[in-house]
Amino acid sequence: TQLLEQSPQFLSIQEGENLTVYCNSSSVFSSLQWYRQEPGEGPVLLVTVVTGGEVKKLKRLTFQFGDARKDSSLHITAAQPGDTGLYLCAGAQSGGSNYKLTFGKGTLLTVNP
Amino acid sequence: NAGVTQTPKFQVLKTGQSMTLQCAQDMNHEYMSWYRQDPGMGLRLIHYSVGAGITDQGEVPNGYNVSRSTTEDFPLRLLSAAPSQTSVYFCASSLGLAGRWVSTDTQYFGPGTRLTVL
Image (cartoon, rainbow over all chains, first blue to last red; front, top):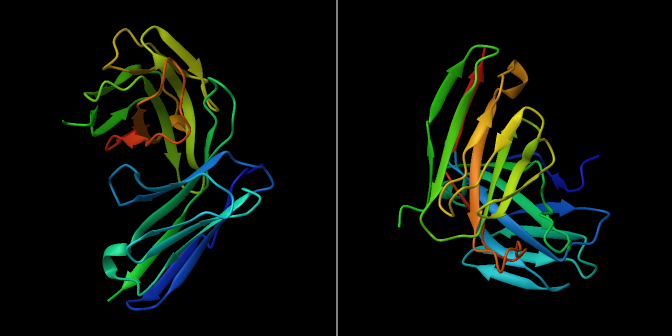
C-alpha cells in the first residue's frame, strides 16, 4: 500500500502555463518535504512544511500543507523549461529515533518551450 | 565541501557476484541512508545509520549489508547480486541531533549509482 499518493504521475505543459501537483495520504505527517530530481542526479530539497495550513513560496513555486497535515500541493506559476524534472513529496512521521521518511512515486513534469 | 559523493557511477554485475557501493560525506552529518529508486516505485529506504557504529534496516533491506565505522563513510554491500537488485542507488545524509534523525533536516543526496545485474 502506497502511503503517499502523488498526482498526476505525468504532466506535459507549454511554457507559461500554470500547474498544480498533489500529494495525498490517509496518514498524518509531522512534516512534509518536496524535492526536485533532474535526470542522472539525486533529489534536491525545495521546501519543508511543518504546520497545518502552512503556505510557503519559493519564487514561482507555492507549497501548501493541508490543515490536517495529510496532504500537500505544489503550484507552479508561469512554468519554464527549467522547471522540468521529477517532483517528489516525502512525509515524515514521528517515531523517535526511527527513520520514517516516506516518498511518493513522483510527478514527472515536462515544460515544453 | 564536496557534499555527498558516490562511487562508482555505473556498474554491471553478473548474478551471484558481490560488490560494495561507496558513499562519503564531508558535512559531519550524523544521519546517513541508502535508497533504491525503481521506475514506478519511488525511493525506498534500504538501510540507515544515526551515527558511527549504529545501523538499522529500512523498508527493503534483504540482500544488502551496511556498516558505519566512521562518520564520513557509509558503504552498501551487495552479498550475492540478483537481477531484482538492478536499480539506481542513492546515498543521502542529514545533520541529525544527538543520535536521532530530525524530520525537518534537509536530506542531501549523492548523484547515484546505476547498477545492472545480468
